[in-house]
Structure formats: structure tokens, C-alpha cells
Length: 416
Image 1 (cartoon, rainbow, N blue to C red):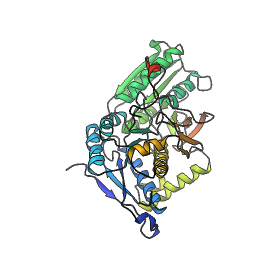
Image 2 (image 1 turned 45 degrees about the horizontal axis):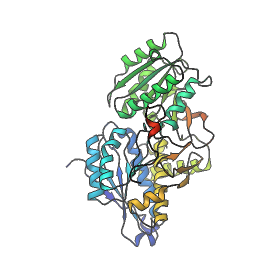
Image 3 (image 1 turned 135 degrees about the horizontal axis):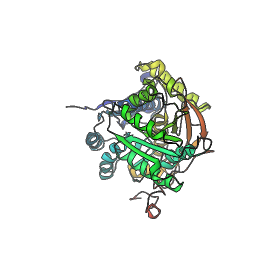
Image 4 (image 1 turned 180 degrees about the vertical axis):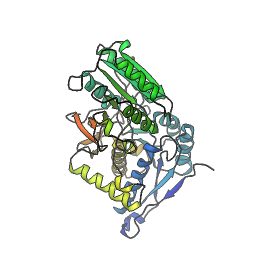
């Protein structure tokens, strides 16, 4: 049978306290693609979860019980995500699942979590337009990434762009995000004729034609910027072709919402210097929490002999995963139970000092984090230099005000 699951108790043998050994394990599902087009992004989140579970067990577990990871590989196959989500909840009895990257995988599993009353922690930026009792969204909503990034591009500080290329992978996240951005740009006086929209399938690798179209569009007299919602391993050939075509950030800046430190590891970043990414965390942030977070992951990677362990990087979805499991632990301890409904209630208002340098909060109502926003420029070493940031955490708007009818939607998950 393909995509077999495996479990690991991850108890740090002699270092683990007797307390952590005193009860039945609490099973935690890890639902990330370890093969296929999304493995480039998701494998590191599996690694981060295994590290965090191991560390929590070394501290005594949760409620005096060790944590046991149940790892599956949906292999970038969206229906398979749903099948494995059902197996994790109904078959393996996990108390919570940490997983998914693409919105199509999240949409695939959502009915399963709602039917079985499971608990999903989703760690990646997304398009909004969703609110579920059974999901905690620890990545960014559009007002915590996409909107601030395009506002920056429109500003004098960000280059004063007048024309925009909305370039994405062909699925729900890019298309919905770009629907929001079109409406936002229209509200700022940008005409439809000054917006070019292009999509490519997952795993697409030939970007010569599209880059040529972008160069032509940008040559028509107005300052042009590219907003990229390309996901997964297609980012490598896209950025390579960008470099080959000599499309520099000073000419046509690209701001990416799904490219961070991990995706740039496989690319020669020297031709990409000055291009942008918008996230809620960068490895390059200087603060004590981030220093600790980076060291923790690098040390663990070396100890586990991960591939290229000496060059591993941290990134935004990894930070969101770190926040999520710590808030889950705090909620379980507050509820004194792993019962889904009790943990959901206890998650409201949880706070955590994050590697971003800010104390983030789980909103009391909408299951989203209050998070800071950063825009960074690519440096020659594949890291980011922060060029803009919010003064503090921003409350998420799951229902974008730029989509008609959202003013009538409640900011509370159904079933609460």
C-alpha cells in the first residue's frame, strides 16, 4: 500500500523525565507531503514537528503523557490528503493534526475534520474566505501579507508601481488572492488594462514564454511589478529563468508570497538580489527568540543528519508550526484535556512570544493569529533584508472587505 503511515514516540530515552512516561501517549498527526511537487516546501515542516515533539517529551510531555508523532505522506495528491486525514483521526486516534500547505489540500481535508470533529493546525498563508470551528490558521490571511505587499509596491518607497502582473499556480489560493488583489488595485485607481494575470499548473517548469510576456508588458511605459503566488518546486525554474532573462528587481520587482529561505536554497540568488517576499517571519530577524529558534533547528538537523544539515534554514511556515504546537500545548494544559471542544475553547486568546520578536495572539473569535508583517529583499546569500514592517501584530481578516458580500459574514466559526 502506498503512503504508509509510521509512528514514533520520540521519547528522549534517559533524558526524558519519569513524568512523561507515566501515561498513554498523546498521538499527534503530521500531514505533510514528503514527495511530489510540494515536498520542497513541506518536508521541513515534518522535520520541525518531529523536533518540537522530541523537545516537548524531554520536558516531560503534556499532561504527564509523552507525545507520539504519527507521520503520513499524502505525496502532493489532494484526495489522498482527505483519505489520510480520516485515517489519522478515526483510525489512529490523533488528538490534533499539524499539516497541509496548499489551499487545495486544506479544502480537501476540511469536511473530514468537521465530520469527525478533529483539530487541524494549518501553518501557511492563504486566501481567506474560510472559517471553521475545527481549524486554527497560524499562517497569514490576505490582510497580513498580500494587501500590505501590494500597498508597498504602490508606494513611493516601494517603487510606485502602476502596472501589475498577477502570476500564480492554477488553484484556489492564487486565484482567490488575485481576485482580492484585483478589487484592491481597482480601489486604488489601477485599470484592468494595467493588470496581467497568468497561471501555470503544479510542477510547471518552462517559464521562458511567460517571462517574455512579462518583459513585453513591462516595456509599455509604466512601472511594472510582479506578484507571485507560484507554489512548490515551480519556483526554482521560475527564478532561474528570471535570472537568465536579466529581469532585475530595479526593472520589474517580483514580490512572492510562497517563496522563503527554503525555496531559495536550490537557486543561484545573486541575479535575484532586490526581489521581494512578504511574510510574517524571516530568519534574518535579530532578536533573542529568533536566535534561540535558529540554533535549536540547526543543532537538531545536525544531530539527525538531515540532508545538507549544515545549511538548513528556518522560514515562516516553520515559525507558524512552532507557534501552533506551543499554543496547542498551552490550551491542552489549560483545559486539562485533549478533548477537541475543550481545547478549541482553551485556544481563544492564547499568546506566545514568537521568533518574529513579537508576542502573537490567537484571536478570541476567528481562529486566526494576530501577526506582524514584514517585507524583505532577497540578498545574495538567499536570506532577506527587511525593508518594511508593521509596528506590531495585525489582526487577521478572514473575510476580505474587497470581496462583495463579506460585510455580512460573521467573524466567528460555525458551530461555536
